[in-house]
Image 1 (cartoon, helix red, strand yellow):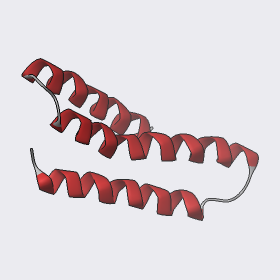
Image 2 (tube, one colour; image 1 turned 90 degrees about the vertical axis):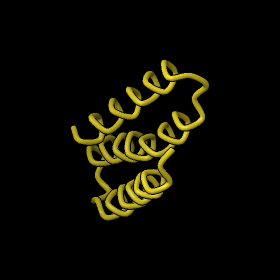
Image 3 (cartoon, helix red, strand yellow; image 1 turned 45 degrees about the vertical axis):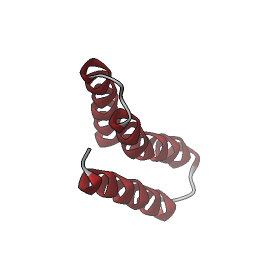
Length: 75
């Protein structure tokens, strides 16, 4: 699979962590920042998992998880 996309999704995770570290340390923000960090870093992790899929169906299913995590991060 695309090594460029692996690199881009890794950089995306790093950028998410940098943003989270800049957020204020308030209780409400902690909840949102924790979820942002989890979903944002899941994009790259799940993409890597999709690259190891054993079939086209499995690849598509795993890529849908990537899309769900990206959408959750956007929210």
